[in-house]
Amino acid sequence: MRLKDKVAIVTGGASGIGRAAIDLFASEGASVVIADINASAIEAAVGELRNAGHKAAGHMCDVTRREDTHEFMKMVHAEFGRIDVLVNNAGITRYRPFAEATSEDWDAVLGVDLKGVFFCSQAAAPFMRRQGYGRIVNISSALGTGAAPHNTAGSPGGSAAYASAKAGVIMLTKTLARELGPDGITVNCVAPGTFLTPISASNRTPDEVEEHLEHRRRNLLLRRVGTLDELASVILFFASDQASYVTGQTLSVDGGRSDRM
Ligand SMILES: NC(=O)c1ccc[n+]([C@@H]2O[C@H](COP(=O)([O-])OP(=O)(O)OC[C@H]3O[C@@H](n4cnc5c(N)ncnc54)[C@H](O)[C@@H]3O)[C@@H](O)[C@H]2O)c1
Image 1: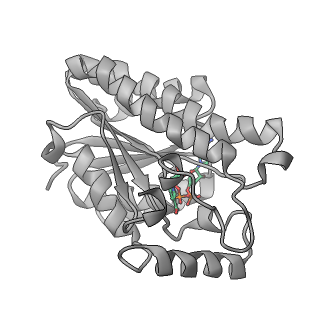
Image 2: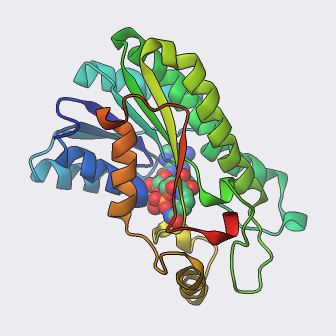
């Protein structure tokens, strides 16, 4: 039980990678709390977790809204008495070639993927500081570590906003690690490669998704797309005391993407 008696929050925890982290954390003994904007998915996830005997809660929280994030953290602290782990996972993407990308695209993606990390960390940090203990794990992306073609289907990319946000998350991780380290709070980052979740299908047809996955399978050093469990276990590592002397780091979990090496 690597998170026994810990209280762990995952933003975007109602779907995909966040949900995988929530499930693993719960099985490792944590009380888990989902912050998301998808009410029905929150309800379904919390129901399943409670039915399985876990302590779980979930609340609507738009990470782009500062007030939401502060309200959310207050609510979690009132309900569970502590905030030990925060995984800043909520994310969106809008793939559009650079020349066509709009100001609204930029603001939407940077708002969730970068500003959301800033707001949630800022809202959770005071509680962690008071405890003298905290683990913040930020989710970046392989696209934040190297400029890769987004899609093999003839697309030259289209990830300017997303890649910029995800690169920003890596730097934000380092600055937060510096500011929060003296209070016993570690801040680390995971940069996933390709995993099959709803985000992988956003702005892609099913054929394009398959083509994208096939391209990855051919080019990854490990020659396969990863499972969500393989990713969640690395998030757990940073969230647990196994990584108690690690801070400010980014770990790529991508099956060996040669396009960033
Ligand atoms: N799937 C991949 O291949 C992959 C690769 C690299 C990085 N990532 C990153 O992993 C994270 C999770 O992605 P996923 O693949 O699980 O996607 P997903 O779409 O399955 O899950 C994202 C979750 O975030 C929530 N969300 C969106 N906007 C929000 C907001 N404003 N406030 C709160 N919650 C919000 C959604 O409702 C959803 O539940 C993202 O940050 C994504 O950029 C994913």
